[in-house]
Image 1 (tube, rainbow, N blue to C red):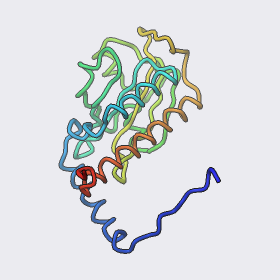
Image 2: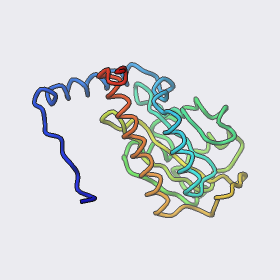
Image 3: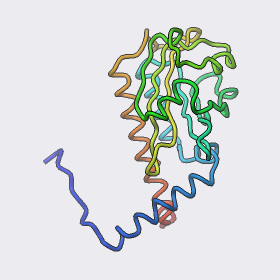
Image 4: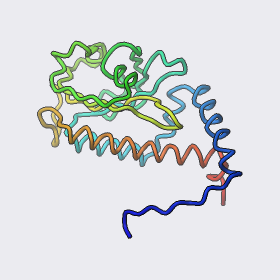
Length: 200
């Protein structure tokens, strides 16, 4: 029957290794920079993000990863025309909407960014554009929150799918894709840590 899930029998020996695997991945994350960790986003993950940004009516989207000390969220990927100047930008945790999403671990949607007291326009000034609407969702992988994925509408940019503002369905659509990417990254990390990706 479609919808029922097969369950693999739990193996006590493998179950004991679960804690070791989690600790190993956490140590790897903590010893790596955001620009190293973004290497986990392969072309499939990037394609999923790009399609999702367009599907919800955004101009572009950004993947933000927390640095080692969780003092900043670092832009590690952007799908827009200003990606070269935007990637590497550090948003202090404690300032701006994406930092709030990271701290509260809840999705956020704002359709009047100019009136939002939480919006930090430092990045807008850097790329000389004006954000009018934003979706931001927490980004989890390797057993914890690791960053935020944001999608924006910019006053100066038009796309074939751009619309006025975002709806709750758009937030759900982006969150679903972020969840799929989380699973893909986890599979890559676990396979690599266990040496399964070296088989054959």
